[in-house]
Image (cartoon, rainbow, N blue to C red; front, top):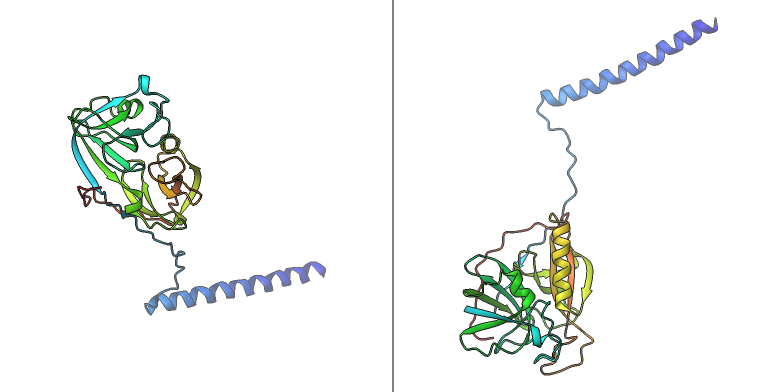
Length: 257
């Protein structure tokens, strides 16, 4: 008796389940027959941030040179100690703190340096590189071009501005809102920032790391003193919310810094 009851109960439940399935399939077939589109689940919208190209303020081409040896650890014209293993350079008139993209016009190799000294004193040369910066370019400095970016002329002067002069790992200059990035580390020393960007890019080439130049709100110096004037941020672009637009390699160039 109990077995018969359980059997009937199972049959009833199975019948109800079958009717529900048939009803769902029938409604779906009717919608398809009438060409009524089925509801779609839209993916969540992503924030799109366009990278703006930065304009250089100075362009020059010619021969370059490098220095090291007896000048290592001596004071430069900007007041900081010269480090022949750093990424710095000397120029006759560019403001201290200017960021220069130097290109070997024969090999196509590029480098990034910060102007912190005066020179070269040989008139046929346009730039005097630190030994390390020259080595990274291959040492052949007979035909180079330089593009200079002066932070004060590229971005707002407000210390709280999030729009900063920045450089991708391939030395492309951009104006970047760093609020769209993940901050990794900050330095007062340019060479340390460049070194970390190179190391991170080498370790994780699929991630785009940026070097951004910000004004130090605690800077109290004046005149030629460079130490502490800027803070250099290393950040990672958030690939989930940022679409990289191809940036033209043609920059508006002005001859007077």
